[in-house]
Amino acid sequence: MPDPVAVNSMFSRIARRYDLANRLLSFGMDRWWRWRLVRAVRKGGPDAVLDLATGSGDVAFALARGLDAGTRITGMDFCQPMLDEAEVKKAAMRKRGGRHAARADRIVFRQGDGMALPLPDACADAVTISFGLRNMADRHKSLCEMRRVLRPGGRVFVLEFSQPWRWFRPVYYFYLRHLLPRIAGWVTGDREAYNYLNNTIEQFPARPVLEAELRAAGFEKVASHGMTCGIVALHSGTK
Image (cartoon, rainbow, N blue to C red):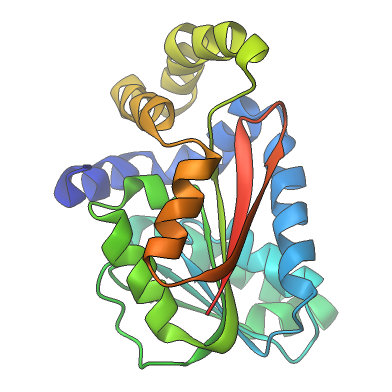
């Protein structure tokens, strides 16, 4: 399992160039993946959403744009430099005024550990986590914490890398192992960080295994949907 101290240090180092790296390395598909996530969350009409492992806030901002105006969004991460980047973007939204400022005011960013959330029981209608579950030192503990803070009937949404369709694996793994680290190293100046991330992607379980982990954490009505030749999946479960 990932070492929390090492993971925190790694994300601290790449925080300032993280968004640019994501755009380039995903060929812009990260925006579509987030849109699919927001669309799924919107169907439940939540009043309070926790975006865990929020990083620089891209998912929190997408939720603010896509959900009802009364929805309150908390973006939480254990890496303060990533949250600092999120606050910079939030301040820029406020300066634009109008609906942009209103959306920014609906988001609160907080530091917190995904395996020991500093939140009371049953305080959220939905919990989202995007590309962060595989960095948790204990996935089961983290999933149980997500369930704890959900209200009865609330839903969890896990957007995460998955195992691609069999025919696509040779191309995908060649990209992960040989091209992605070079591009990321050029963009962020930290190739080693992306070697680590590549390993976590390759080792992360396929959709049926993660579905079983969600059920083991107490979630019901578990489902998953693959995207982009299976390299990414959106999982959901209900408390």
